[in-house]
Length: 180
Image (cartoon, rainbow, N blue to C red):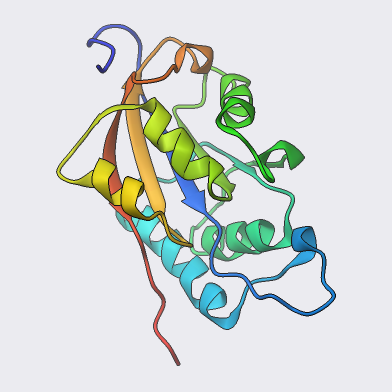
């Protein structure tokens, strides 16, 4: 159930799974870079966020190379990117880890972007969504692929108030860049 109108400003949590990564031999998981498809899809994710008018006030990004590269390529599609915090807690994060990060968000932030990894991101979306528009919940349940974007909306006085089943999953998008 969504918090009723008047319970605070409308806030948006946007979740972006990193774009497709490469698997170079001998490279630790945290250091894996984007694959060629990821290098195409990450800018497409940035364009999709701009076209949806869902640019964040703040971004929190995993410290993993593939997530950082996704952030850099996506945000390069915007005139002036918002501030970004790189937070190791987003790497291999559980729902509890992700909620801790979200709850630390300053109250003046109305749109927060998390750039991270599965399965944690998909599990977070499903945990927070009390409902979804169209078939969005089924989409996330069946697959939340690389470069996928999920947007949750909720009303609250501050980010610590975001709790399970209090948000509406308004959209799920999987942008893909064109092969050259």
